[in-house]
Image (tube, rainbow, N blue to C red; front, side, top):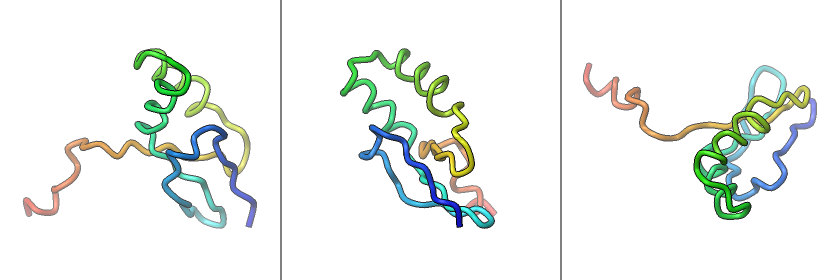
Length: 83
């Protein structure tokens, strides 16, 4: 199995390891990454989101590139409860 890559500086946002086919991927909390950028680097929310999207989420660094998950309520939760 190929080694998984990590996102330096976002250790506090690490959620765990995801698996897809024959690879393991580091999984991070997207919103916590934004908080880290604001707190650590003094960015505004807008700056942090722009930085995160351009430099982190959309950066392909090869097989094993980390995954960033948005854990907030998107309306999809609870669908099974309505059935």
